[in-house]
Image 1: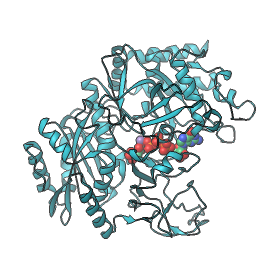
Image 2: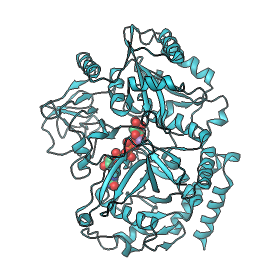
Image 3: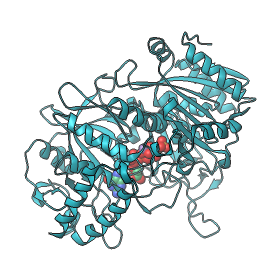
Image 4: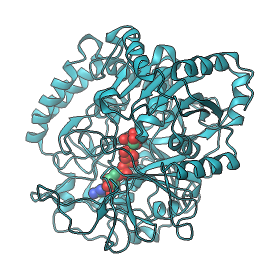
Length: 593
Ligand code: GTP
Ligand code: SPV
Ligand code: MN
């Protein structure tokens, strides 16, 4: 039993316990001994499987329910008093209706279970950037994941005695019933309620729920940014490090870019990459007039499929120990595998649904049965990563030179282009579109607009959110330059034109050269595009004309795109900033000239 002097916290825990009726309450202190005891209990209960400890020390496997494998955006709500404050892109419920509905499901949901109290800090404990949350959960899997993803335990409770504010996070697996699943955010009450799910993004409430949805609401009021962005440092041979932040929608390459290893052809230049974060960036304007960023997390919750020594050697190194794997294939030697992992395809195994699996297996419709779910993931400490930044614990964060927006577009979007100004950059961010991936439930491949990669994560009216971006730009003496990248442009046969991954450093190099006024560019209708000769292609051979095709701006296609942008913007009605309509008109006239 941990003692807290924070009366507000004590009262709230007791109140939630009366609602959920757990058999007992356990406070998570952050100690190794408590974690190990929980791992044992979770193994005995069949919630996790101990993996081969010679090959994968400290690693476990977890399988979720079959219909609980990704974020469920249609069951995710922003619950503000006024519907208008949630905006046209969020699902809305009134707080009264939402609490009532959820109470019906939470009532007695923890009977026969333990309620764990997890005090956690997003950001270094005590930093001006940081926010504290307390998650109540009946899932040991959630506790074990939170211990990897956030700063957890007694140090946070001590901090809560100095300051009173914390986000009240309540989670119960309840019956893991998709028909009784709700992910509710009450920004006006600093509260999150999640019930009926056991999947990461729905239940690790410090992540998307607090660090983006609630934090974006706080950021608007307090004058900072909470964004769906990776943060990385690029160190030049002279030791100077430039940091960038990049927003790509879910499963569009943040984790991979954040820990890139320089490609063979550029090795001679002696770059070194430092990973600060792979998913979330909190940014504030410092006294120097620049934007400074921290990663509020200390773990990665990364996509497994496609992770191998070629695409992401640093991650392969990272996940060899102290890692929880979710929904991957279990091999007969008690190690794990997924589509696109290292090594040969195993002869047999147990698939993510717990069924015997063999290569070539087909389902009733004749489609191949996957060993790992396409959104299978690993939870792993950043500290294990060979490129983990030495500034992770810096209370001030790192200064950001460039902000990148990107999406997964087979057509249209050039490999890279630079915004003409901050305002134009906000327009570019507001018009990101991407093909849907397996990270959320829905039709994979469908193009949807995902402004700033925040469509599923903005805790308030996105029209107001765009205004916030414009306001922040005015407050900065040295705003970062804004760029758009697209690693996914394809040829007529759907084959990627750009090799991506490690080779993306060639584009980052151009971006930094632009930030430092070292290189010229072509002024096109959509922004500044590189001259072909300014991308260093040493050691990389693309087929004839590919780079030109990758950089091409097809005005006809962009005119079609502008129609879809207009439709998207119109839904915000009066709440939409005039400046972005100006940018829209300016784009249209550039396209027609
Ligand atoms: P979330 O964790 O969902 O926010 O995703 P993320 O943005 O961190 O995406 P991640 O880096 O995990 O990449 C997702 C998928 O995109 C994986 O299947 C990668 O193999 C693939 N991918 C990443 N970078 C590239 C790239 O440069 N080119 C291509 N073609 N694919 C990439
Ligand atoms: C994403 O979907 O953007 C993720 C995974 O990073 S989750 O935590 O499930 O949201
Ligand atoms: Mn993400």
